[in-house]
Image 1 (cartoon, rainbow, N blue to C red):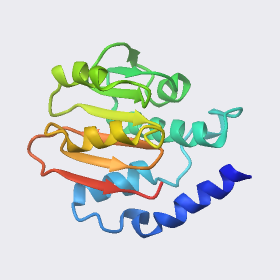
Image 2: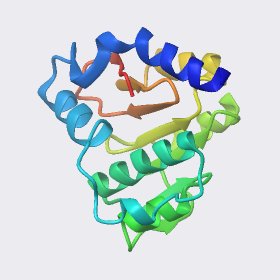
Image 3: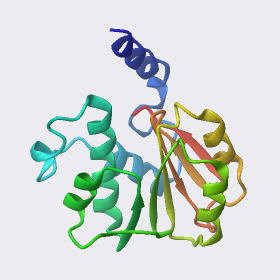
Image 4: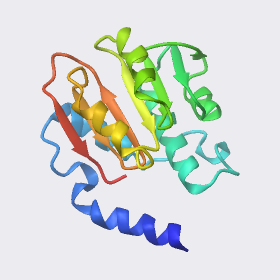
Length: 172
């Protein structure tokens, strides 16, 4: 009961950040509308996460859409293997800076290892940033991160040096 109430309160508090409102960059607006908040059902949504709780399924489907959009060769992740494999059949799970999904339980020293091999195409996803907001603030304030998306339950970071630094709050 408390989880449902908390979920709705978070959603209401972030309602002014729905559907890309306040996102001025066309690239970031496209990303919010067509990857983060995509509402069309994909080809294998029904078979994914049938027995997962609502949050695991919601994040898994987001990671599915993210991998489907990026089509990375290698993904470094701490879970969600079925979702990622369904989005890209050729993906290999291993150490990579192409697309990294970390848990919020990771320490800042683990982030420094990721930052060492960083390039402009790297994407970092930090799962469950609501559990470790200090880690998320460190990532947002880091000079190497350019565009960050705070989805409350996870954070997405892009490192393209040609972009201006910006943090978006998205109602997810």
